Length: 391
Ligand SMILES: *Cc1c(COP(=O)(O)O)cnc(C)c1O
Ligand SMILES: [Zn+2]
View 1 (cartoon, rainbow, N blue to C red):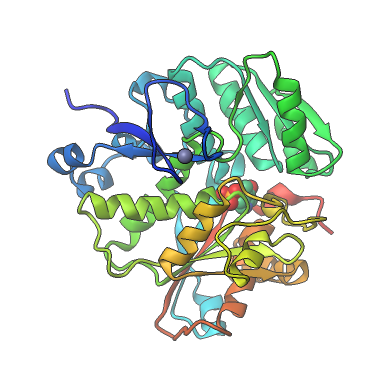
View 2: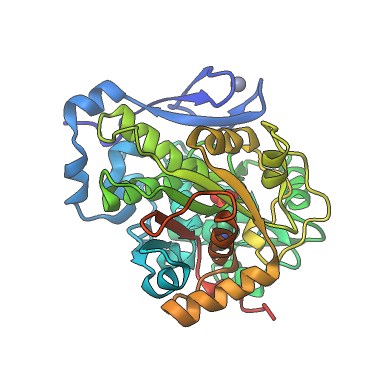
């Protein structure tokens, strides 16, 4: 029987030290940096081809050989993945772009792309014997964890800022997750979660503090490669908070190249989009740094990207550099305008984070050569329904 997963080991994103994938792992203790999953490239090349994935049913988990779970019985799924990639003809025409697309992650369970990461992380943790979960969250990751834990009948303890959108609070309460509202931001929620977790068996699924949420997010990149085939977009704009999506999409392209299924000559430029009210990645990019400083007084209506400093900041900066991309900040007024444009011109009710990518596209044209023929992909990370308490 061929293996269900070709996961081989884990590797530190900084010092490249190897860690076993057979036990519970968090992050590299030496570098305080994320671990990445490494697959058996030789066996994948020998046994698999890209085309066989594309004819299978099963949404995200049809990529199981390239995901970490070894026992199919352990998969915790709500039908995530296989989100549409939509052409934006009317907005494109207004901007003079014939090939403008949007991948709409709002159609995922929990209405947000966080579902992909938490399906992967909860499944693998369950396989490794974890029975209780904790997460500090800006909102959507907590709501997803609550759903996937409920799905498998295990407790979730969620710490979120008390000004998190009411919808996220309701999502957590609906599945009876343990919910603590914190006076502060996601990093304050993280500090409180760590304090409360002391002496308990809570497994921390914070962004990049365990290796497998990234693997779930990676499937967005696999779907993008599948959809566009060898003719990938020139530019992908992504609303970056913790950066799992940005790093995950890039990881997918790198793996496809390693497996011999993608040509490395025309990879997209990866553009990180943030709000001017919380733009640590943009600041680091402008200053030519390889890491981010903690952003003070973070404030934006786009809660999902209200992340003062990512644990994977060095990985994010590397992806931007390696891909020839950039980082752009847009203000909340422009985000709301872009949200309205997507809704009125294309019928897509995007979340503010996703709408930020359209706002950023306008600014990107000031320093990036974009022609009528340029193929550009916006990532809408969630549904506009998640932010009902907006003005
Ligand atoms: C979490 C989140 C983001 C940011 O994703 P990262 O992978 O942490 O960069 C963007 N949009 C929404 C709606 C989110 O919930
Ligand atoms: Zn290390």
